[in-house]
Image (cartoon, rainbow, N blue to C red; front, side, top):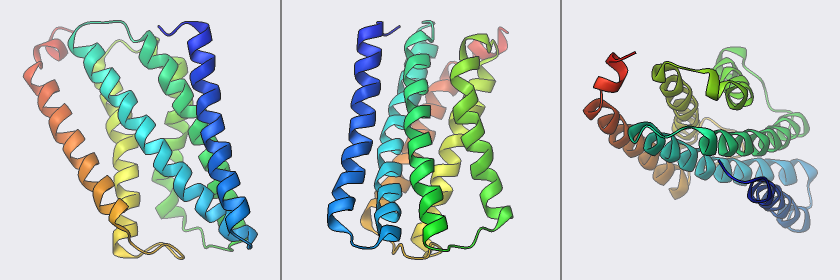
Length: 191
């Protein structure tokens, strides 16, 4: 478990990063729609890094039979920061008059709900499969976002090298962590 001072420092640090992202585009974009479009884009990239770190900590804690208190603190911070990202994203969609296609946003909406609820349930979940469902589902939603970007399906967002790198990093994470979990599959059977 992260002590209260460290937890607050990490949370404040994350919020400060989100504010810096916003301020960079506040001073560099004249159009308010672009301000929130770019804030959402780079906030999402920051969220990806935090997600990967949380997944890494979960994997390590699970494999060495450690409690999940540290992971709980960090997924809580991830949830707060991803809510800030959602605010940027919602304002970008609204201000740029982007169409919302319910079928396409349903998976993301479920992921957002999971991101918000998981920190409050993490210590109550006994079956590790449910933890894996959380991490893989949230990651797959992120992955599909990058696939859509690479295909050019996002209005106002051309494919970039970052999208290819993020796609590859997520795939490698799923495979490497998945192999680690598979090697320790006896932990799943003992439940």
